[in-house]
Length: 164
Image 1: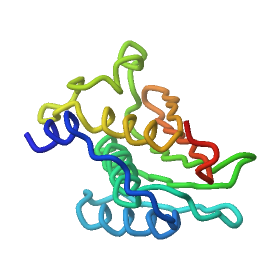
Image 2: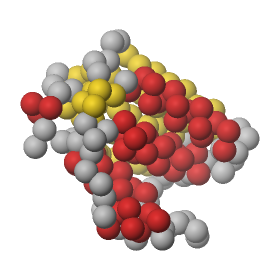
Image 3: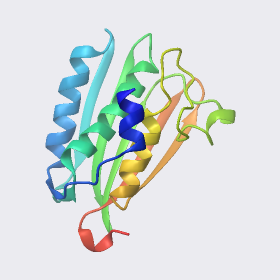
Image 4: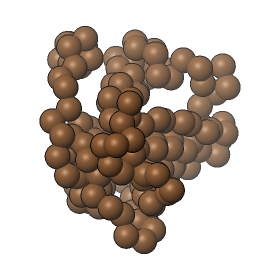
């Protein structure tokens, strides 16, 4: 119910400087304690990453949702990689897993509110992720191969000038 209300009434971002390395570290620390055995988390930050202008709490929620989904996609264990790098006009963030992948017929629905393939899922996690990324002037993309894993890619502008 809380997720539904948060989705229906999202708060506006509280803009400030965000240290992406700190966000990734805190997400890995959180999920490491709650994930099943056999799940290994890796962080890869290529080169210096500029401070990001955004809402740290919302961006942490985005990374937490994606990382938990990645871990849940691997009930037998595996590796989850969180990577970030500076690109021409912003920052690219990747969350990659070795999970079951997303079936082709579900790819165009995964960001829809209330769509879930999980028995206890609300279908709001990825919808919230998409809304937050859009509010930050960014984009999210997904590539998946059933049986091999999934990669979510987020592109965020490094400064407010790029915001829509």
